[in-house]
Amino acid sequence: MTEEPADEFENHLREEPDPQLDPERSPGLHADIEALSDIEVSREDVTIGEATPEELAATDTEPVDGRPVAELLADLRDGDHVARRRAALALADAGTADAVVAGLARAATTDDDSDVRQFAAEALADHGGERAAAVAVELLDDPDPWVRAEALVALDAIDREAHAADIEAALETDDHHAVRRNAAISLFKLRGESMAETLLVLSRADSERLREWGAHMLAGVDSDRARERLRELTDDPATVVRQTAERSLEAEPGRFRRQFGGALETDSRLLPGEDRLNRMPEL
Image (cartoon, rainbow, N blue to C red; front, top):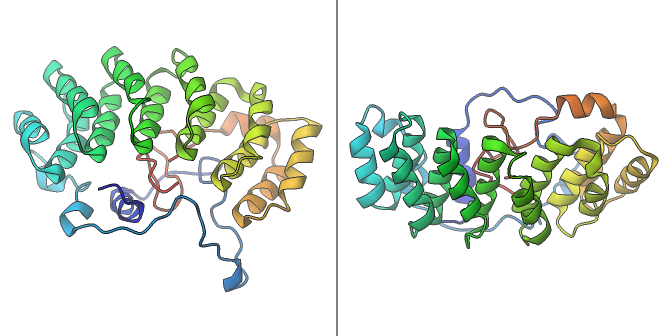
């Protein structure tokens, strides 16, 4: 199951009351709405789909709390798609053992369900290490964009500096906005103002999500070109981009860079309905 509205609901189930403060919150969150006509319903990343109650609850790991690791690994290998998804997420909290890492690596790279691959990649990143990084690099070629976006979350968490070339390649060659967004955020955390040219390009992307995040990160660039572009974006067709640009113009660039955690931190909430699984646009 990969239809996004169902995944939005899944992620709301998984979100904890959480700690996120600006600027890690989605830059377009809480845009002022004065009339129904201000509400945009044409986001390019939303489609309508169907999901069973079991699928909607697949990210709730409470039913498997306390299950032995061996049973979770058996579910990950032989269970139905809902059981495999749940087992993958639950194994994030298991002890880092060879069998756990191997089971998650196998699921992340071979399971025929894209959500299982994505959840396994997420869990594997929590265990860290060279095997997790190698799997994440392999998943940058996964056919599902949300799996590729999750792979960037993993590389950012494991060692963004060591994998900067892989992350940059994803930004330059991938055609999906969530993948490019995650790559840009990771590189901005690593390179700061030297990302200025890239952010200016993103601010002109067809995807309003990329323009939104380009405008958000331009808040950390102390240059006349950045401010000029942000002023232009206050007239962007998308409300979320306009609101983001207005806030970025008010930010102090140095402070913004020091505080920036971006959308890839494992303890932060992203957009409404979006968490580390990158679903709503992840991010």
